[in-house]
Length: 141
Image (cartoon, rainbow, N blue to C red; front, side):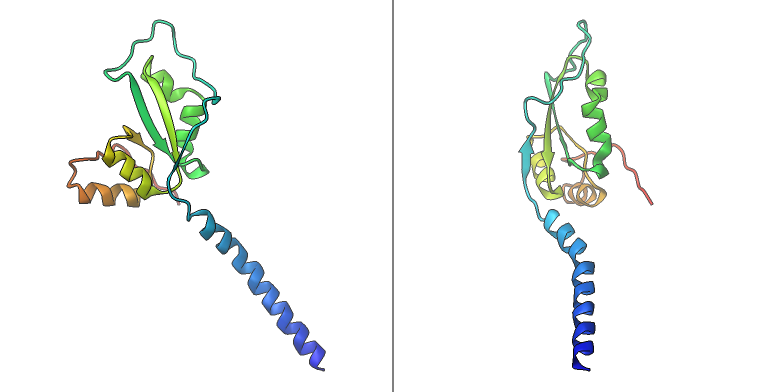
């Protein structure tokens, strides 16, 4: 009879471990901090030969390299952002955490950031709207 009780305990422990594994993986994946420079071998967007630069010669864009920031990923990959910016160079930079992207925006090393609502609103409130402008927002449900 003790073998049956031990087997049930083992089964329960195994199920608990299997249920906790996705949470652990998610927690570890979200612990990243900092940024990574985008490789130079990334595909370059097509720009018309007669395209004009904007007032800046370069625009530094920060984003998260994941599905929740698909707007930035698709816009950069497909050249949609480059098309709108004309001959102005784009310098993309991937970030792993909202606070590090906010630091880059506040420090002047980024011009545009695709970022989640909580870091954006917190930074806007803390700076009293002097450092950041929230241009757009979206929600999914």
